[in-house]
Length: 98
Image 1: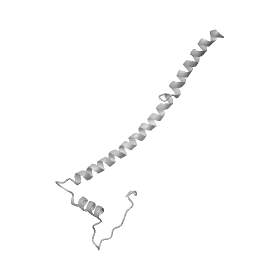
Image 2 (image 1 turned 60 degrees about the horizontal axis):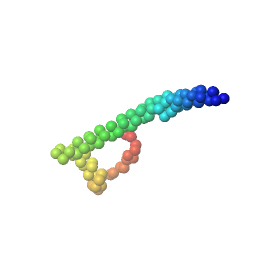
Image 3 (image 1 turned 90 degrees about the horizontal axis):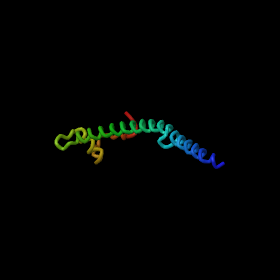
Image 4 (image 1 turned 120 degrees about the vertical axis):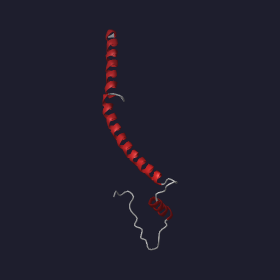
């Protein structure tokens, strides 16, 4: 019995290492999850890049040296609620896409 204990423990250790290689957090099964995670992060990055470009465009249009008159009027009307009595304001759902 004592002679078989050493090799049995060695076999169990090797099997545990193989199991960790396959099922561990950086194992073979985790590679598939990494691919999906990277793809999700790329989608999020593209959406954030698009939003950043839109905001940068607004910043450029609101430059103090050359303000875009239409954008300035839109901004003032939105923030201050300034409109003429003969104008009608139609609120739009901001989440709806045109």
